[in-house]
Image (cartoon, rainbow, N blue to C red):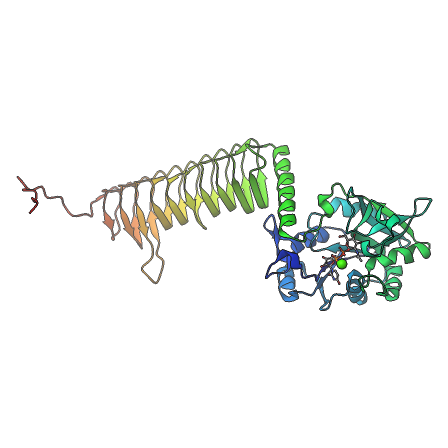
Length: 453
Ligand code: UD1
Ligand code: CA
């Protein structure tokens, strides 16, 4: 069935006290409006319309991946006015679902439940009963319990204000009727706005069946008006994500202290200590252990690898049974083969490190291709940058690099070579050679120490 979906995102959101449109503020690393678009686009037959106004250019740009039909509402005059502007783009059959760019946690399953009830002669409302219904439109039902109208807070009588069942704002209306209803809206009410909710009374009068669906939780339909509410929904979503990870077989030492801003996939028996952040797409194999305060972004980590506390990994691939950290920093383009070791205060970038190779202490390895079973001594640096261009360092299998070596790229070290500690290597080192590139030590006899004058 044709499924038009309108996402309202024209509002200013003054209570955010922000230079940016409210709907661009992020929940779990993703702009709220994008999260809603993602949920909407997963629905079958989805035909997306995005209503923008305040900072519309920025909102439309942030959403461009979803190829929604962007409709402008420069002088917002209410939710009904927003829908009226979309009306010319709606299909003649099917139904229109209205969603909100600032209600980010709405679930696909709930919307599917609504869609399953939709017919050309049915209007589906998502309602919820609240202990404190203040501010919301109230669901007015007749003696038979059928929905007759929605009355906004500011237009409600004292009796209507006592109604606890409220309009979440999310509704699904049949297109055959919707065009006519929208054309009949007036702004004759307390706010001088065109209320989309006025179509409910029109539907009731036209004999269209009005059915209601409830969300799983209040958070699902909660709107964000200020940063306190934004933070509350962030926590809500993080809690849900943590529960899913645990249900999938990961141990979280404290499920309240993990932040996933993207997609985290975990194998069996993954253990994650506190205060870790996962961003973008992260895949952890079976038995991976992650220490406290690690930050992993867009990376894959092979089975049984241990990442010790305070390590950062960005856009990298880590093999199986590796040992990383504490305090390691793997920058984009790092590829560790199985059993590699990257120790404390080691930075890598565009570095391929072969199986079982070890860079254990205080090093920078950048623009490097390193073979297997190489031992890199403490304080070794690849001098990859000449001030203009970056150059490659190539180290073959079984090389031993003494501590405090500078490898001035471009340079090659062949298989089995040994480099003496403290060397500055500027020329290729051949197979199994010992390279010794530091000043010879001179020991002078009976050296008189300087004395104080
Ligand atoms: C609306 C509903 C109310 C419901 C409540 C749920 C109407 C008339 N009322 O009230 O029944 O209980 O939501 O939160 O629909 N927007 C536009 N263009 C506009 C007006 C609004 O894009 O012209 C967007 C806003 O940016 C916001 C959303 O629509 O994201 C809701 O608008 P708002 O004015 O906050 O509606 P409420 O008064 O809360
Ligand atoms: Ca309003």
